[in-house]
Length: 376
Ligand SMILES: [Fe+2]
Ligand SMILES: [Fe+2]
Image 1 (cartoon, rainbow, N blue to C red):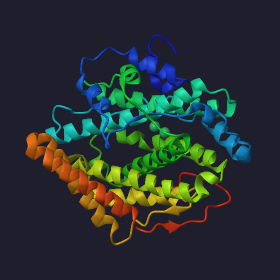
Image 2: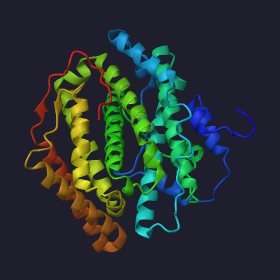
Image 3: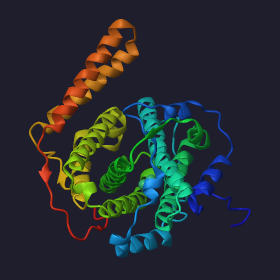
Image 4: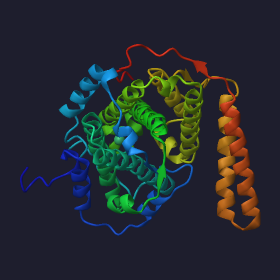
C-alpha cells in the first residue's frame, strides 16, 4: 500500500475497516439514496437484530470437519481486492441512460447495497457480542465480505452522484428482531437466493454481452461465490441441531420463509420492467430460474421444496403482483379512494399469499453430506 493506491474497502480485512474507508471518501450531498435505504416496508431490505447470546452458545462440533474446511476457505480470502474498479470497469454513460432505466437501475443498486449492508451489520454485531470463537470468526469473515460488497455498490452509485450513507444507516435505521432460528432460515435463504440471482444474470450476460449495460455485472461471478459460502455456513449451523429442520412446527416455518422470500423477490423484480428489459431478461423466466436453483440448493438442508411447477403457483404470484400494483397506485393517489384501493390490494395480496402456502410442498430427504459447491 503506498500513496498512489488509496486504501479501499475491497482490501479491508474487517467490516469496520471497509466501512471507515467508504466513509473517508469525498462526501456526497445526495440524501435521497439514504432516504430510500431507510425505508421499511414489506418489500425493502430490513436490518435485523437477534438473541446474540443464544447464537453464541451454538456448538459446531457435530459439523466440525466441514466447519473448519469452510472457515479455512474463507480465511484464505480469494476475493481480497476484487471488489474495486479496475481496467475492466467500462465508462458508464449515466447522462445518456434512458431515464426510466436509470431510475430503476439506481433503485436496484440502492436496494442491493442496503441488503448487503443489512447482512454486514447483523454479522458484525454477532461478532462484537459473541465470545464463542467458532461463531465470532465466521461472523467477522462474513461481515468483511458484505462490507466490501456494499462498498463496491456504493462506488458504482458515486459515479451517478449518489451514495448511501452507511454509517448513518447503522445508527438510524430501524432494526427488526428475529429469533435466531428465523435468522437462520431467512439469512440462509437470502444468501442462497442472492447467489442464484447473481449467477443467473452473470450466465445470461455471458451469452448476451451486448446486453451488459453496466460494468458491475462483470463482478457477479466472484460475488456470488461469497454469497454461496455464507449460505454454506448457515446450512452447517442448522445441521448442528436436527430439530431446526425436522420438527413439525419448524417445517411449517421453513415453508413460510421459502414462500415469503420467493414471493417478495417476484414482486420486487416486477417493479423494474425497464431494468429487466435492458438486460434482455423476462422477469417471469428469471424468477422461476432463480427459484429453481435456490430450491435445488436448499435441498441440502431443508426437508421440503416448494412446488414451483404447480398449476396454481404462477397464477397466484401474478395476482400478488397485481395487488401490489394496486397498493402502490392507492398510496400515490392518496385520499379516501386511495386508501380504499390500498386496503383492497393489501387484502388481496394477503389472501393470495395464504393461497401460495396451501400448495403442497415436495418432501425432500436431506443428504448426509451437507456441503455443496457452487455449480451453476
Ligand atoms: Fe454480499
Ligand atoms: Fe452474503
